[in-house]
Image (tube, rainbow, N blue to C red):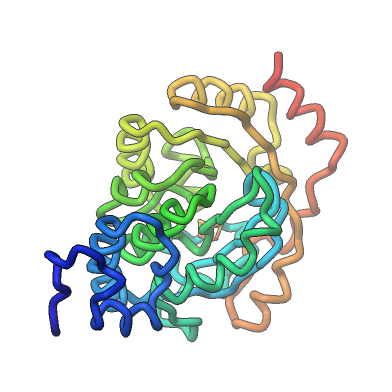
Length: 281
Ligand code: SF4
């Protein structure tokens, strides 16, 4: 691959640069030096492929303001109440994209995002595709977008790189102790605890979320334990309790996966409100 003329006084005169600009997102920046640096990164980024389960262009529940939401394919947990089982399999059919192509799509919606909105990378589990997610968040920050990830905090490696370009972490707290965590997700809490240690070293803002399921974690004891748990996490702006819904059941039937909470009713909204109040006391 040909190298750019890094000594060129004006990068816009570089023929190779001009040609590659046609296929790259980084063609609008003011600083020539920055352009060159980012452009070379852009070359690298074109080799990174992300696997995306679905996209929501005008989301309003996954972070502040209006958001472009990417649901990444792949998750290692098996939460009993998961309403996105189609995102579990890493090798499932998905939309494949490079960070450059994706940021171009996202930028088309920038004017709808206003000053509060931005991009949220959700899942599945966004931490399982660290190269793609880091590169995409980096590009989004470069273009002045607010960035968030919605995660269960269970990844493999390079998690810290992702957090370097993340303004807000929406963290799903499955449970606050090993026994309940295993009961709900089927796995140990070790990876989640490692994530918390890394998060503690970063300045990201944090929203905590927990799905409340009747008969599983809808007790005062659980909410008070969540409140205590939150005290050990830096920069927590709010804690939200989400009601368990049965919306996802039909997806399980379609995928031929047994649904473990068949007999569990949806969470009562009034009770949930009462539990939410406990967090404020
Ligand atoms: S972490 Fe999220 S996507 Fe993964 S199983 Fe749990 S609820 Fe589903």
